[in-house]
Amino acid sequence: MYIDCRWVSGQFKGHGYSNLLLDACTRDSKAKGKKGLVILSSKKKMGFLSDPKYLGYKGFQTADTTEPYFELMYLPFEEGAPLPRFRDSVDRQKNMPKGFVLYYTNQCPFTAKYVPILEEMIKARNAAFQSARIQTREDAQG
Figure (cartoon, rainbow, N blue to C red):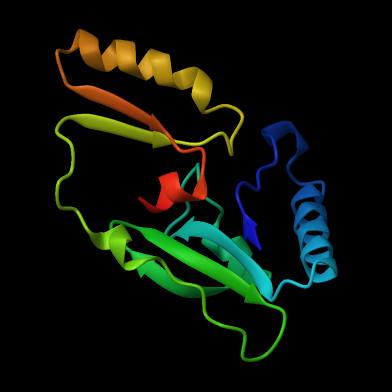
């Protein structure tokens, strides 16, 4: 089971809500017969990705990495569960569009509202801009 976004607002930090959210994800995933949890993190703490130190503390392990800093972390529920990994296409950088390209999803409720703001700022600087909203699994893996 993949966790899209695990985030607790600043005013609610330090009250154990992150642990409660992760525990709920674990229970739900086990009830659905999943083999483990997977979440995107990074080699160092970044504001938009789950903290690797916290995940390590909770038993997550690094399953795969890709440049520049992404880590796919997982928490297996059973021994011998298949190791999740990034697709080979993740490292492919051929035919990349020119300029600034923003790929985004609705996993975080705050992302979509910033797309037009970024577009305006980038175009004001006469730079090329494209945005691509990822809505399906195929979009994400394309």
